[in-house]
Image (tube, rainbow, N blue to C red; front, side, top):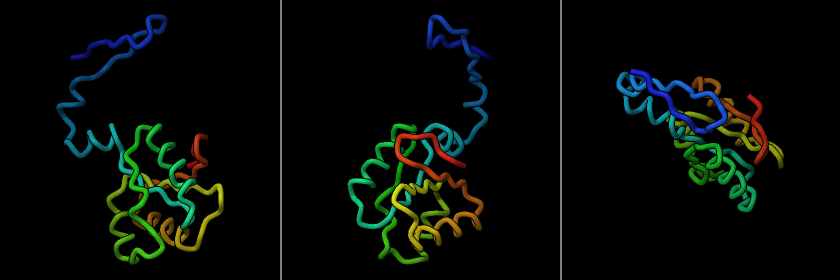
Length: 124
């Protein structure tokens, strides 16, 4: 069953497939609707982290920003990275060695990594 949703009266209606909702698991639906994002920023920059959190939420994401700090153990960092849908690296103030390690862990785990500047389009 396909129904049309008119979001803008001046644009063409876009098809919306209701069968997709029935065939996807709840985990897959959640990933598409509100992805879990680990935000990596330099340590000790709370105002910058707040900007990054706002940026992530404006993208429709569910940010997990304060979970990873320099004092978090390597095993715990790897565990959180493995459950995230996206690893967002905000690099306006540089990339620390710990952030670099997290990016390498995410690459080996096959995670999606995005390099971002707050309120600008990301670089994949």
